[in-house]
Amino acid sequence: MDWTSAQLRSLVELTRRGTITAVAQALGYTPGGVSQQIAALEKATGRQLLRRVGRRVELTDAGATLALHAERILTTEAEAVEALERTRNEMSGTLRVGLFATAAAEILPPALRQVRETHPGLTVRSRDMDVDEVYDAVAGGSVDLALGLDYPDVPIPRDPSLRVRELSRERFSLAVPAGAMPGRPEVSLADTSDLGWILPSAGSYYGRAVLNACRRAGFEPRVLHEVTDTAATLALVEAGVGVSVVTDLMLRLRPSCLDVLDLHETMERHIVVVFRSFVEHRPAVAALVDVLRAAAGRRFRPA
Image (cartoon, rainbow, N blue to C red; front, side):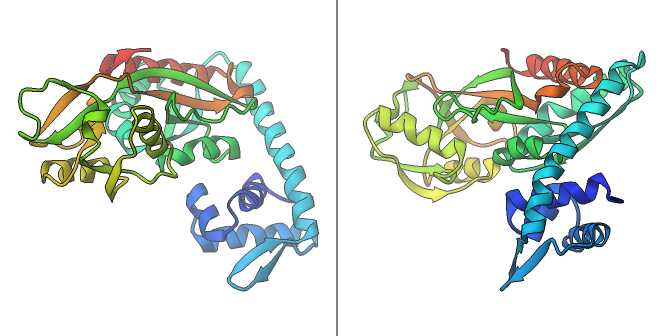
């Protein structure tokens, strides 16, 4: 069959994400580009792979069958690339990295400088994405590896086909409006039971991790503002409308006039790198993981 990896990957992502628009966002295409990839795949196979149902599309039986085999084909192709790269003496090629905004600001720039100095033949392309999407992005092959966050209270699901390597750890503190708790360098989460909170969605890993910690402390946080953006969260705390937990990395994103208090409870998040297991010994991947670990270690407490 005369098809391409990009066409097969579009089909596989459609089985995971359900809409052309979501596939386009995941792969960095336009919706029209994804539709063209699927149309070309239908032409190559001589089969109708999609059918329209209202405003959505769904796979036909032929589409579902091909998607199942396409995933195996893409995995085999990636394994072949990894095996070929191990035969090289020089460090070269292109790696696609997915990362969340705070990692893009603090970890990626020094890592890229180090790559240019030590591995000039290696090209790194990065994509900013929602932190809860990086795991699926690696599993789907839209990026080669990704920086993500893992919470001990709500750990990332461990898929045997993926590897999760810890780069560093951050401990949470409590951000409160300036002067709201004078003379208290340390507080317990239970001390906030009567206060309003600013938190991400309870459906996010971060939101669930904070909710679990508060419930262990014996209360249900009163969430007044459901906010994902860290800078917006800090601005709301500064404005005096609620409290939130923060890390040193989060505080660097926006200089703010607020008080940061130590928490009696140990509440952490781990900065991790995620990649597929069969590329673990690929020289370029191993080199970039080492560089990312060094860059993270220089900014946070080493893992």
